[in-house]
Image (cartoon, rainbow, N blue to C red; front, side, top):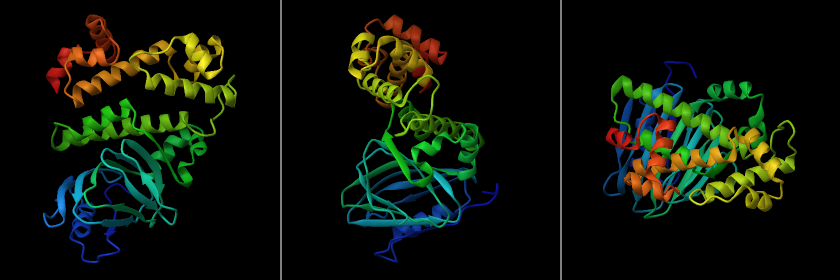
Length: 328
């Protein structure tokens, strides 16, 4: 996508050519303004859709909409994009191109490519609350990343369709930071661009690690990688009370040495360090998004020693938890 060029969007309701919602969405998607917003007409529903054009190759859409009647929305544009979509409300049905409909589940993230002219349609039932954050990124931005990673993403099927996974604490934290950005004007653009790139890197990394056909890692077989991915999922689900290395090794049918060395090789951190990192990410999210106190957040992620929690938090984020709360 040429810098300075604005994508031409077409948004429509195949069941109502005079749909005011789709006409309003098309207006905010076509504008070159930094930020524009549509308020859902009171006769149709409630809520809003906000579009932020960080730069011509990068844009954010934040929505919180509820319709009083069945709503179908279709859209296509004149550039090839990689789309990151995060469903934070009720699930709904979606279709990309001529493929079969699939369910967008609440609490899930989706990554897929959308070629020039390919349509995306969504189907919403009366009363469904559509809450989401979507990011459009010019395909060449992702292509550069793929070239640097040696084509590893080909194993995920992104280029041929879409990939989805549960929104992780690390991703949810960045989504919260984007949606609650307190900066304005040019500083806001700089901040959001950094957050989009950070979010993209994390999503791509998570996608690569969770690929159905794992990419080669020296010394690890496909069986080893599948077992180690299972170990990470178990840790993620039990972050407040993690299993011992011995019990985790037995659950995934690897010996302790292979678990410890393979986990670090595949995910970049030893098991213990990964648990600490995941705990701190989750605690930070709880304080920011759920407005929990330091003590409440620490206890929920498994820290009974608040001083120890504060020490680890400061090591990771550079500030004490109390200082972090003052910045919110």
